[in-house]
Image: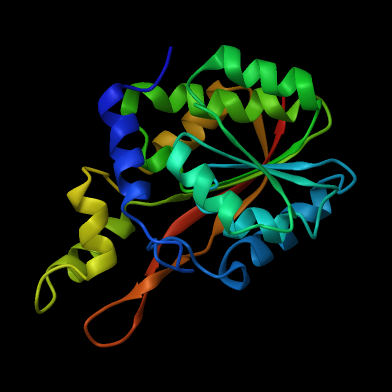
Length: 239
């Protein structure tokens, strides 16, 4: 099973039209707001001598930070254009980047067989996946962890819809970075709050720690306040 052609092209179109400028994607926050605090939550439970795989890596901003905290980092993304962005942003080869459809279970298994047990970092991927694909995305996390890996997964909660609505209804309509997300048919905060723990449990994942912390974005409200989207986080192991 693969993602639908419409969904794949939405992401390819988005990344093709996104420049290489840091922070050009609304979620491409500096790691100080994302991978750095998330690593502090994951590392007490994880073996840092294992590599980490960044699922939905986009332009690789978080991947490159994760490479400094673990024994290597691999960023994977559905979009070939996103992987190209990440490689251009990393001429020193701090991390590796590959195209991967998380819904393609055979491809996920092949990656797991090639690299062995790994830690996983996944920031806001399930919430915008198509409903029929979400169990496979959660299953990809479990497959990649193997017996020794640990995962940090954070996903937007329903409160994010209110924040995004406020941003979209500001003077002049949605800010430019958010407008481009909507223009490509991408649907942030599309999953229900109770869906996430159910998906993770059904994938054979055990929650070792959890909490709530917002995901700061690179765009601002009309009053100059940085957009921060409410989110839940989970540290996970394979059951």
